[in-house]
Image 1 (spheres, rainbow, N blue to C red):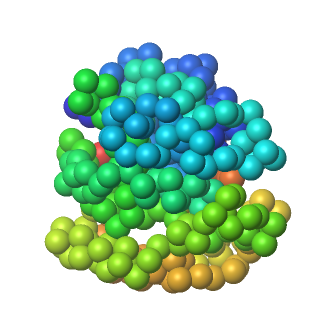
Image 2: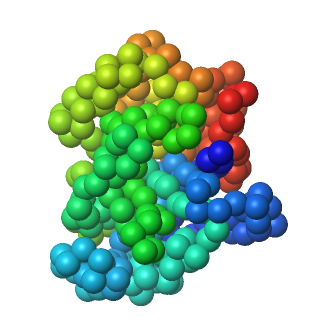
Length: 269
């Protein structure tokens, strides 16, 4: 049986504390057949990994992208951080958030994995160990089906540098929305779990009402949140997890904003 755990934003090395064994003791019993899924703002693919050239034969290695000194000052290349994830007992899955180097992520070759498109960030002996789950995809992992849709609008983009610490690709393209609808139609608009970085306007209103002080962007609507409003009524699902807001909050019986918690996806959600 494949076990799947989910947590919120990790922001490169900034929020790795929650992954230590004292906070995530279940990892001692996991294998590479089990998964930890990070709900966006992974941030560990930012400055290039010196292993990339030898794995893929494409120039996405060290030096192509330099980290912003204030944002990623503790990192040189991505290699040490990706080594950390590769050496964990589980396989790491992540969707993209808004605070990612999207141009670097998008330079990885697209592969198929468990029914959906992915970027394989790291693999050992041909077996993926770190996997970027792409937008608008439906995956079958064991007995569970997951729909993923990364991306979000950065409310701090006016203080960031274009194609350096902020990337226009943080928001989905028209083609990615179209692919999402096509893949959902193929599974009859029914999945077990929805994993996104941001949330619908409907859920945002709940966050604002309950946690206004912790909700940075208030009720600022955008195209992705509008799309998620459609999914709230069009798709049949068991549970929806999203990150982005740096809050652990169960909003109702089918939605959770996740940040520091690490929860297992089960058949009893």
